[in-house]
Image (cartoon, rainbow, N blue to C red; front, side, top):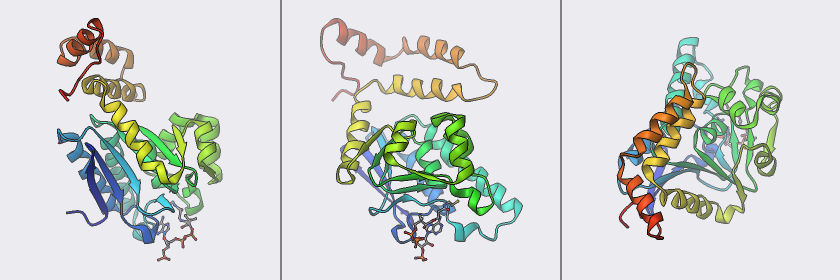
Length: 258
Ligand code: COA
């Protein structure tokens, strides 16, 4: 079904693995479209509670957009490539279910941008993050100039963007780029545990949190107003009934009828 990714549902978690190990999982345009297709399918599939994006092998999550593919692009082709890439990243960020990046090695350029578009990031100790596009004569094109600043702040973000330096997982955690650092052999397990933990919470509240938080970063949108709206709307949901009833009855809420 896919040429560049492998998808597998394990314990209600959809694991999307970029499967171009010999090219360090470099992201061709088709690969990104397949990731978007898989994430959209995961958001639609009731048996999927959340998703993980990872890379095949133990060396790379994704070492960037595929340079050999875009090396001869015209201005128009590059503009389209960037717009399509943004579309993919936004589909992940604005989806209804949690997407965790399990960063198993190099996350450079488009790979770092893909990890940053995911809601949370768990990294193995060998992971390396960076935006080396400045070495190629371009700025990042898949949201890196925006999401890196959102995650680590302008000072550190500009340093990484301007120097093309990469940082290891431990430093990425210190900067807030990564949520947790673990050994490579337990990376998927840890990422899955995070998805499962979030899956046990109210799905409709999780979805509302994504909407409110995403609005914080949108120009001309009032995130506070969005929060007031989503909070109010939540009172009309079955999840709210279940959550409050469970609390009153001193039991654990069961949002999925498990
Ligand atoms: N695009 C296309 N191919 C890539 C790639 C990318 N972003 N990153 C790695 N590859 C390919 C290499 O060309 C090589 O292919 P080959 O065996 O057919 O020659 C293969 O993946 C292995 O990479 P290699 O460079 O030999 O591995 P390394 O361990 O020596 O170096 C990196 C690893 C990550 C430091 C190096 O591959 C690199 O700098 N990649 C580009 C990073 C980048 O600039 N990303 C931003 C792109 S916008």
